Image (cartoon, rainbow, N blue to C red; front, side, top):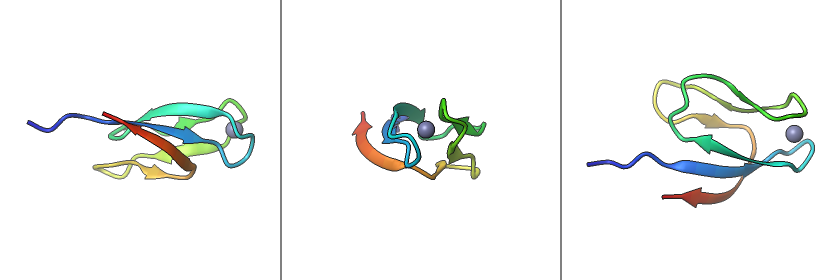
Length: 55
Ligand SMILES: [Zn+2]
C-alpha cells in the first residue's frame, strides 16, 4: 500500500512555509498569491523550494 505524502515547501517569493499534498488535484497558492504547486495527473509540479517530505 502506498502512503500519500505531504511536502513542506517554502515559497520562493515570500519565504512562507506551506504544507502541500503530493497528489493535490487543484492548484495550491501561497498567501502571497504565488502558485506553489500545480496538478499534473500524478504528483504535483512544485514551484517552490522543498523543505521536508512528511511521511
Ligand atoms: Zn508566498
